[in-house]
Length: 458
Ligand code: NAD
Image (cartoon, rainbow, N blue to C red; front, side, top):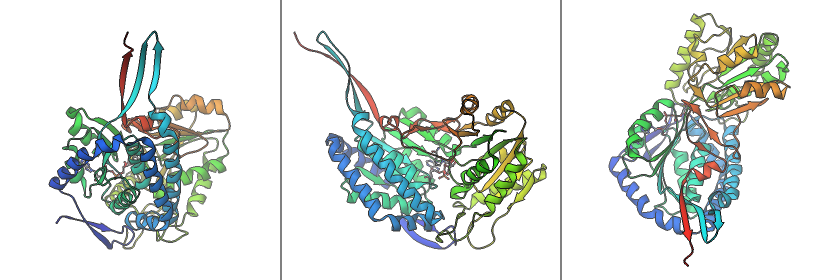
């Protein structure tokens, strides 16, 4: 039997050995999903909603143990694990409230015996290959609307969040979603690759650009609906009229929350030269208050670097920035001990010659660059192949809108950062992805429109 070993990134200790899939079991499960989907789609939406309401109730009931499982396998600080689960409840509520209107058949013409209607038909069997950094959020952004709209889901959680993936499956099945409608596939990348070979109608992926590009190549000629939610190098600009203290406190959290491992973490900061020094000083003071330590402790803010290889990326970005003249204010190295941990690291005097300002860091490390004008800020913000989010801090809304409308990003923030709303579409421009989740569009995304041309006889 193939096994997936799960280690606690905070200690390096083995915490579980899960039964893993292989190419044969993935093929069997894909056939089961194909067989189970029509009966699920034939059930009224109201019945599918009752299952999702039951799933939500299960999350509420088991919230503490689900948070502990997520923290043990990912090293996410326990308070942030609880935050993710409570935030998830609002997302589920949104999907439940919106499902009827987002999927209702629309009549667009009714004239002279001719009626035209748009019906939203489920895609069929969808694959979901997911990331570990917010496993409940990114998993359920796909799973919940896909199930509500009548699809069967083959769900491949990250190998770094596989126990959470099995908990999602347990709660859905307990709530009445049939076992041949929601099926978890456990394993590493090879199991994801095996899923791509199956008879599927849609593939929804969350993860790195490198894997997303490989998946796009693999399924490109298959004509399945493909959505990719990928990485970012998200910039924020702090204007000269902003309050440097308030902006620094907000952005320190935006850069370091979840140990910097959010797709929408602030990864680059540009500050107008007039307030640059005051901003950097408060930013560093704020970061000093972020306690690193055991992710299970209530007062830990900085937890583990979930994937050990990312430590090499962080080391390399620090070495490159230092060699090219960046000023290190705090941090800069791994935290000694058994687990994977890295100090909160702040650089100023950075430039776009440095990897730190070009490639996704995905850790608690940030570069702050001085700029002389809004034009320079816009040019630097757009000097990236990514386009997930971007922000501006200023009391002047017109100024913020003028800057943000020129920036290539799927989500833009005025005086806030690192924020996702279920009511707004979540999408990346450029190499940050194709397609979207969340909002009513993120429900429709799991359907295809069928056009009805209906002429009454006689
Ligand atoms: P990853 O690309 O390493 O892995 C993602 C998933 O792909 C995992 O389940 C993995 O097993 C699977 N996989 C690996 N190789 C595969 C292959 N050849 N074929 C099919 N599947 C394969 O990414 P990760 O480390 O899990 O996640 C971190 C990345 O995800 C970061 O870049 C982050 O920015 C991004 N992310 C983006 C969003 C978003 O909404 N845009 C959200 C969360 C994370």
